[in-house]
Image (cartoon, rainbow, N blue to C red):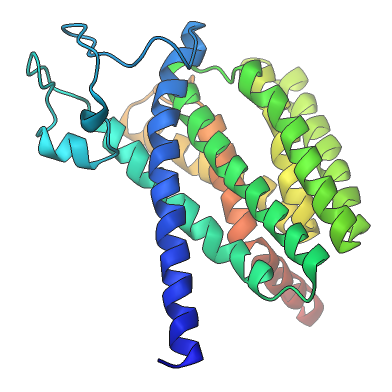
Length: 283
């Protein structure tokens, strides 16, 4: 077998492992999304059926597969189990794979040990951001809140991982734009919240700093595109909801759209920003 074929097999196996890890994290995020807003421990007690109270067995807690084998029902009382659980697990697995495809090439192409570790830290940071995105989007959809118990640690985790990556790679401009992006997006959302307190909650303001931190690390393009995309996507959704259900656009959770915009910036921000600059120059 050629070296290229072996490398391809290794890459496929690595992506599969990341996907399985994402499935497991997705299962955990279902617990987080339910328990954190309720002020419950995410560790104890073990998960149980809300209908009959029976503890969920380990073999019935395999992401996606268990739900399919149980046909979406509790083994003990046959109460339906929401499709959201396997959907979140699968979506998190896919998101983790996509993030790995985006950032893993930097790990494989690193020239030395320091830059390899830096690229791995960057990958870890954005996998963490992916998990936070899923958890907070679910919670905001359910409760219209963005708990400080998740938002505040995200500042610390992101800053530590990204600063370490910048230190090892020698790219201090990245951490500088990350800090500027965090402060700038926080300030923008704060101004909007003060000007329109019924349209923007302070939870969104605090989350904006986290989003700005991660997007700013990737550069000005991802930061600006990600920030702009959140308002465009959220605004379009609001227009659709208002057209279908007049008055229904009030109270729309904006956190999910902040994350949708953020990931637009992560994956397409540089390309879209360069395209925009090219059009401006040509114009």
